[in-house]
Length: 337
Length: 294
Image (cartoon, rainbow over all chains, first blue to last red; front, side):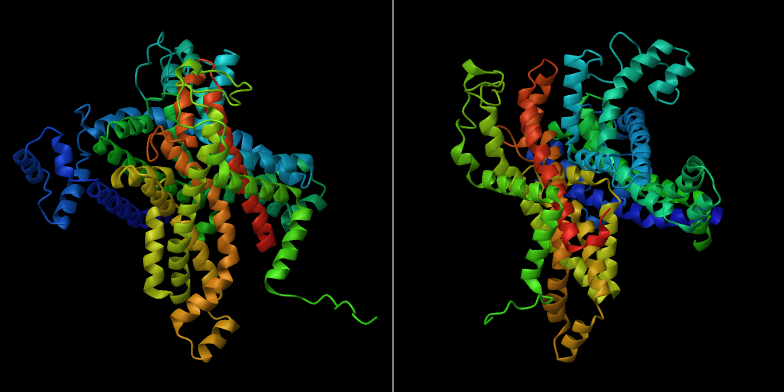
């Protein structure tokens, strides 16, 4: 078991190396002269030269790469030009906001997509099957920033049910003492139910937006794999033995059908992490996505590169976790590995 | 009975494809609808900017933030530009970006994938490594990084969208080329003295074309979404250019104060275009490869 996990971790190493090389190349590909850029618009020629030496830009590319990797190993992602703060610190502070939003979005999506896929698979060709197909196609067709804005218009402006789309917590509340960084969990740990509700209210619309966007792949995969499982021999045997349809679907088919669904989670996370940036912009969510967008507007590259690297490393780690999880729920994979 | 009707023979090539296509469209109304919608979008992209009632860039502050009316079908934005004219005029740019990026990745990914599948060996390993590295990033995030690093232009948006789609194309092309590597027609071509590169281009490539075209129409929707998403966060196309993503971004601030039309119509146009491409892609796949239908 431990051997399998180690083996999977080794597989992730080339991906990580690739990610570091690509982000390094992106830093070197800055439009114009990076030294002139980092020196600022008012810098003299000497100052630019000085910065070039200080940043090591006069060194050969391979030496620069060594330096870059060294900095990364120390967790140094450079400083933000606009705030002067270390990028790593800023990203760490903002990460929980993004993580809370993304995970809740995934949860919403699973809660809708999995039952929908199962219903569609148990009644192929029925109205609900067609509805599932249309809904899934419509879900991926909706630009995620557009869904968010429509939800804001309907639930905030028209109905007044949702709070203003301005961050994680209404200004009248103060954030709960930080334990996990997730407001929902922290507020409960502090026993502050009011803050919990306030945080949840802020979360509902952005999480729903993300959920709608990632609905399609999960619903489609659930339907397809459920159909395959329902046609298999052991389900036929269970039917012939007179088990109730409920037992067959829930205990027999569902568990087996979930295995391929777990593998699509990798793709879903790629969607979610990207869509996260757009959703954070719409809802003024103080996560790492809006941090990157703010940096982008100010042409501040260090935070942006730190963001791309963080996202990629997280994504590699998530894929690794999915791989391991896959091995845990499906013993056959373990034997092969 | 002098001119007898020839018995239906198992015809080949284009005629059969068209007949099969007509059958599928008749069978699946949705695909027919998507195809009609596609034609409308192409037509709008071609003649749209010439037939709009107002200049998409002309502002008129006296008529700012007016809701939809007979004079301004989709209302006006914060500096009085006609939203309808802008939405129509933007079709050309958005369609062009999507088409150009899909065409680019078709060449890059398609050729690399075919070569990888056909030659195997180190070609396969190099292409596979590149695809894996791209796949290690969340795609939209990588596209952001590429555009930010290379410079904020429409060309770079096209390039970035093509790069993030590369693995998809390379993989499909590789798998399709790989199964045809030792096919009868390839062996025959080799026996009659064709070089490997010639076999690759003249025998393998035309054979995987249908699958690749399906791939193109399936990713077209994603390409438009990707480009619009990038311009929504301020990358690529810049104001005052009429582009759907930017227009939604410009209207976003007015959504909370009730001026819904500024963001709604460009967003709806974007949604319809993507929906059309996705439906069309599904339909085309049903024509080319009925077994993969889910």
